[in-house]
Length: 365
Ligand code: ADP
Ligand code: GN1
Ligand code: MG
Image 1 (cartoon, rainbow, N blue to C red):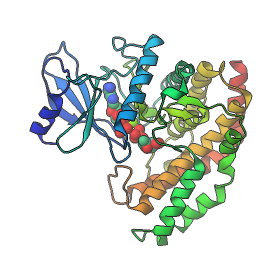
Image 2: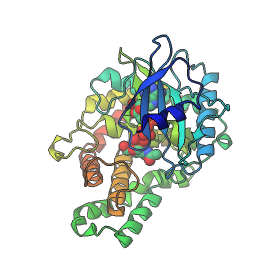
Image 3: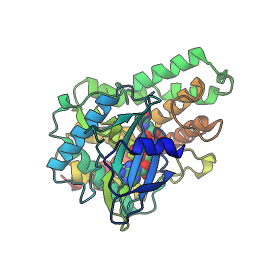
């Protein structure tokens, strides 16, 4: 990224001190994220993000959601000073984002000092802390009026919608990639009905719609140097959803001993200890708001979320890789295969997962 351009963007924001040393940062799949270091050590560092406008077409509504959530978390005692919530840096015009001369949208956050995000989890403490943080996040938002939040990406975790998108990509096959994908497509079709369980429970009115995060992979909770959860980040997809979505999406990245895009499927194994620690932390913080159907839905979500991610990665691969950032030509296919392998492994351990959740729920009742 050209330095003059960045300086022009930074100049729009209320930045303290003097920033330099722009570096790309993190491993998110959606936005362009940069870290800006401050030359004055007593002043903050910053995160600058170019918002992915082809996904988030209504930036005003997106930023409205984020501001609403941050304000609500502040009512619950979270603050910029204690670094347990994200803090947006305002533009000099008092807004939460700016549009540059090329039409791109930019926003800035205070950099959360001393924190780290993990693509792979290392120990039980991290898992339990992640569970507590995501659980507390939902509990904190449980009294936020849902009408204040725009449904920014409708049908985000609606399995029928994701299967329809896959069917549509298959019908078009714009890159002629289908010929090699029979095993993956058969895998999806064979499980499609079973994966509708949570949707059916929701449609039957058994699962309350809550304000959920909807993107709870483990690297969206930052930990401090003592492995304590510091802050839940990546607030773009906060919308009404079922609590199971947040549980299952986090479990997908915690129980898996390998990376989300692991090429060597043998390396994809389940770490039940990390799963238990995460589930214990999450249920501890949400048990008082959960109904019994929601408790049931948690185990189903452990299959659903990796399945949905596999379907989405496969769809993007067939479609020609327009949605996710990729780092190699067949990256989305590799990601899809890894998620499907994870589903296979989780199916083999389903009873165990269900019993563990029941046991933990009784303990926290
Ligand atoms: P994406 O939607 O592309 O995943 P994120 O908002 O999650 O974008 O940001 C990408 C990465 O940048 C995060 O995984 C995290 O490592 C880092 N990050 C984001 N915001 C902050 C912040 N305020 N302080 C420190 N690191 C951050
Ligand atoms: C994207 O933004 P990031 O990298 O945290 C995606 C999630 C997927 C995830 C898979 C807005 O999350 O839904 O679960 O990739 N975010 C969006 O790693 O689509
Ligand atoms: Mg992220």
